[in-house]
Length: 425
Image (cartoon, rainbow, N blue to C red; front, side, top):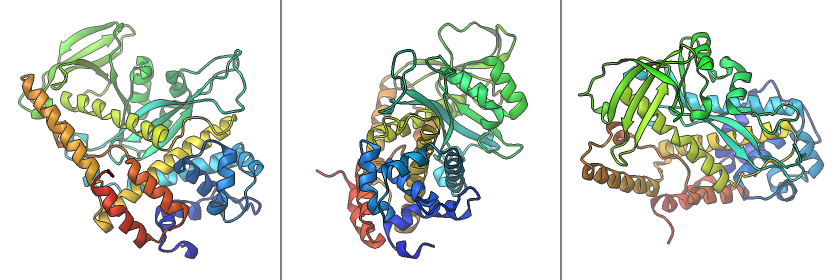
């Protein structure tokens, strides 16, 4: 325990990160600019609203307790060793969030068919180029990361940076996924556990799906492209009386032009009356659960929105691939620390974001009314899912202030309670 931080918000928020640092085998003794200083400072930069690395290093005195030069910060960002260290720390914090996930946090725990599955929403997320980015074919170009968000515990992990080959403008996400191999797509799941990734159509590559399923126990759920060439083999029977299958029109076995057998679930959203065709290589789950899991994929988009529009992580910190990978992992650490803090606030202080819960309930009632007006039954799985998908700005502003001045935990709790009950007017 770091005694100078006892009973401060800084201590409570960063406790899982200090634990990861204390048990890490990747850290080294660097007296000029320690690994701990780099990690704590960089996560703090994600949470704070700053425009540049120079602006952050000016503010970092309060975070580090000493002057930190611009050169120290940027040298640490491009270090290969520190990049590996940051990745290991990020994995540790994610593992803590996973270990602390209870059934009350997990909207999938109520469905026994999903026992034995880890489920992730995965997607590419693009950040603008850094201030000193080198040109590719005459232009400064943004870069894309692939992230995965657990649909059970809502913790986030960085999968990979899309890295174009020399002379290429970009690397397509499916090529990145192929490059990192199916073992990485297991997300650290233990042997015997199946892993589902809900991904937008950028993931389509049926031969890859077959390889990932057969070699790694990894399954994909996505949306069918309009130009897909797929032939129906047969209809698959499903339990129409199961309310979880409300909106399912058909469940089919299909085959691709490469001869790969897949599954297609056709579903109509009761609120919008929009028809969806989901493709998957998972053949056992009820079709309504397939549709529901893909709907939950929207959670990762909300997490990206939080990162970009609330934490203001819109552009790269520096131009090297190492710096970009570190930044991505710092984004996941900040996200996961917020998840862990929310759980602590609920379990120990009885604080939940009631204003966001009320807003979500109001929206759900409106959707239920629209479904009824359309003559449809509302989706039972959506109705039972209550999870908030991102932090409110009032929470984030409270966190920033409490971390910046290291507010006593008891005082910070008193300040937070009214902010979680209603929006300021």
